[in-house]
Length: 320
Image (cartoon, rainbow, N blue to C red; front, side):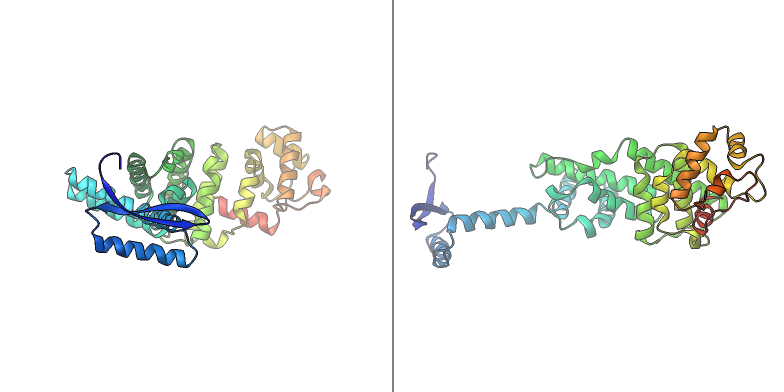
């Protein structure tokens, strides 16, 4: 070698080409160990496998094992201990990692994306542990930054979970807690993920007040054991399709009694909207099957308001 070191090598032919395989450094690798490595390479040749490629593959597999999230997280904790961090701080981080390991622990850290981390955080959030979820996101981010510093990752996916989306989620959680507190409701601390997770992820890009309030009421309904019977999984799709004006018009349509001089004009006067805006909103509610799809229901001068069964149940889920 140019630097003066010595290597055990094996010369062999594969695919009609002369090749050279480094078995290990001398004298660190003894003669007997070098012979073991030589025999191992010859067994690969007997199976028509290039020993050099087999060695590269084995190295890559070892790298995958050491690149898992859990392995790197444990290394991060070891570094924190060497740096003199308090025992209680280390124990808190270990407790937080316990939420992440079942989903992320065995995965190559390079393959973990923001939606994967968000899935972990939402499983904590649906139990009402919002502060824990925030701390978990921060702690997971520190592991990714440690992996970047040690050359085993290139990006920190937790960065994309900050900003506007994080503010929207925080507001949704806060509004939901306020609704449940005002009702004196006891929140389910172990709700079904198939119900709660869509309610947490669907509105994360929503910032309009009327719709944030709507999502908060839906989430509160799903987490309130006494009101959960009013909730249906299909409400997520309905809520995503609604506009703020629809949210304003829907409860008025549920009122008993007559509308005078006409339904559209009554709602326009009540809300300050134009007649066209009300009609567009009403037609949107028809498409979502929240009210009956008849022209008479739109134009009838003194028609009794009549929501569909789906409309009544949706309204029951989102009202106080």
